[in-house]
Image (cartoon, rainbow, N blue to C red; front, side, top):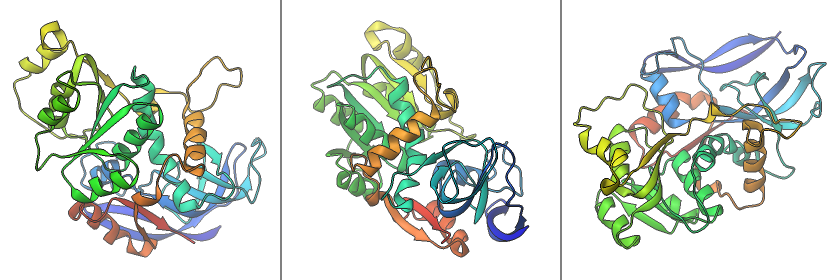
Length: 336
């Protein structure tokens, strides 16, 4: 056993860094890492911290993804060895065991940049489930980590992208990442701007990356006839009361758009790549693609890293993400 540290949500809105005893002995298919960096998933983790996710009971050990150095491997592990640097789905902890997935980080890619591929794996699902094609117009509502990365991935795929947010910092970062068409929804009407940009047709694809039910309803007004609305954000108990008749008409009736709504939850795909090649998409394949795109500079993540903090400042990190979204966008813990 070795002494390790981990972030814990002790109760609603209480974040602690705790010591714990860690057994570094791997089981047959496990990979043990010494964590270098871990990334906060703002929407999911803040919902858990607020007590809105019924599957996350307190005390809860949060975490979404981590890059670490391999210190031990189980007997059944192939292609990964001690000393490799890998991206895993581990919690915020100084040491962890990867049971779900571990993918090698390309040589030369900084760990604090590689860890953003974990969030890109959420974002890429919107591209996968959509029917988007070269030249299509895509509107992305919400330019936090997932929305920004989704906008970039659609643009890399050959789509014309317009990003929508009300927080100037996020709009500024999106522009730095190469998203040139942007709408500040606190200043301009997104529906009007999108209609003008698309010559009255609307967008073939609209992505709601906010997790806000109001945005998912508005999305139908941004879509073209036979367009798609991709639900990328998770709602975590957020409630909205409204008359759904107009929305249902936009889905059902041709004269109102015949819009299709699709869910884009990451876990709709199998975790592991199919060695026989019969199944095209998997979480593992998505991860490899996103890491390559980051390493080659096509998927830009450096502007998204607004804070790299020591784990001892974990309470400050979550408070900043919750209360100061105009400053805190991408937060990575530095465990080195």
